Length: 208
Image (cartoon, rainbow, N blue to C red):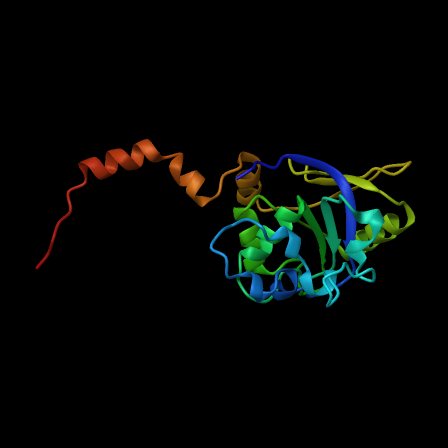
């Protein structure tokens, strides 16, 4: 997968909590065995009208958000089913990082969605609720607002006339996976020689 160290891009806001995976990519688009072509169907039921035209009332469709690559949303994003297609749809749309808040005991991201994100190079950034609220306000105030998400420094910086930065925590193992661009298979292949040597010398014992 593609390594993630730092990304600068336009922010887009989705002011909704508990966005589940069926809303991210509806079930009718899960029939394909390919891992491509999902981006155009991201948020399908919200994004399009019954006649197939873009829904002007859906916030992500606003002209000011076109070309955005950093999504800012509310807590418990990616809840619901375990479909990895949800992450594929988001990344294929062009989103590189998602920012969401933890609210009380409710996490920023659902566990399975978060794990699928790590496997596909999509950075999930958890900030405080007040910090995410500030980002929402700044995005609405400054059209075309860009931010830099720096994984190495664990920092989100809003490129305002006077820049604002927020620090975020992340599991060291997840950070290592993303910066190196290695999923579980990639990490395993780092030990390919040792695995090959073990398999060559290992003698199976069969017990009757």
